Each structure stands twice: as C-alpha cells, then as structure tokens.
Image (cartoon, rainbow, N blue to C red; front, side):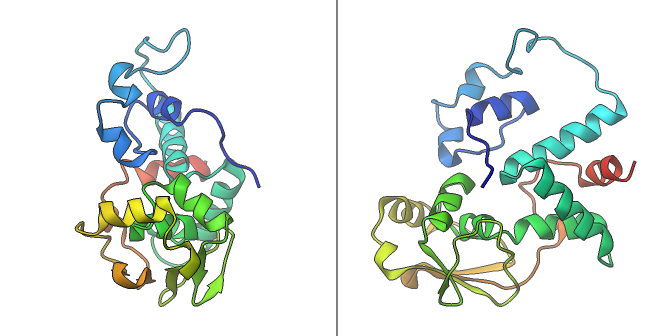
Length: 209
C-alpha cells in the first residue's frame, strides 16, 4: 500500500500554506511552517509568478496532500467524478470525503488523517459492525462507523475524542462519542467543505486539458 513517508511539514511549506496535516500541532508554537514559511530547497525563498498551468498543478497537489492521496488514486477519483451526473467539482470532493480514513477523522476519532489511516489499517474501525481495514474504502450514506470495543481505550482514540467532544462536526455527519460511533448521513455539498483551501475548478481544468 503506497503512502507518503517523508516529513509532512515540507508539504505545507511547498504549497505555501498550512495544510493542518498534524492536527492541533499545526496551531501550536512548534509548527515548523511558522519558522520557515517558504518552500524547501535551495531556491525556496524565491518568489515566482505561476502560470495558469502552475496554478492548476498546485491546486491538485494541495488537495492530494490534504487527503493523503497519491497521484494514481487521485486521478481515478477524478475520472469517476467526471463520469457522474452533476457538478464534477462536487463529485470529486464527495469521492475523497467518502474515504473511510477521512470519515474517521471528520467524526473526531483521530486528531489528523494520518492517525485515522493507521486506525483503519490496524483494524480498529468497524463499518456497519464489520471490520474494514482499507483506508480508501468508500463509505455510503447511512453507514455506521464505530470504534471496536477493545480499541476504545487506546491513547490516540481517547485523545481525539477528548479533544473533539465539544466541537461541532461536519454537517453531513453525526457523532455519538459516548458510544464511540458515528453516521455518514449524506455526501457533502461543495460549499460545506469550508476547510478545503483549494480551487477545485482548477483541478477539473488540469485533468480536462
């Protein structure tokens, strides 16, 4: 299973913005981006004006990195979105939001998507009462996502629930922290995903060149 294994903070620096890949650590004084808010590498401090293609590429790379998806999988999501009826932008966002690792994170059972991915691959997550250990598993409206009973006392889960208990969650989800479960109610609308700092139309234009 392919995944990005290098320093996450380099990705934020490359895109010139915080992608919040480490959860609340990104808002603390320890965040490396605050100390070095420029691209990594010898020429990272140089300011370059991007072409239209460059803006489209950066939008694609940013969205991929936020959700922790590699190029091949992301292209598949786009191709599926383009074949569906309706707005391709909204379809694409729904494709990535339906990933099980993302839903676990959105429900507040993990402090970031990388931890959510680990919870899934290590078999701590149930979908409709059955173990699913594939992070890219596509959750459907009405699916119930829960933490295995034996896994409810592990530190990452306890820490995340304690942190998120008083916070509002995404409008397309429902969470029941007392019973360690949540429901994927429906697919999100494009305007509802307010923490996605990406021009999704630019991504559509990139792939439809």
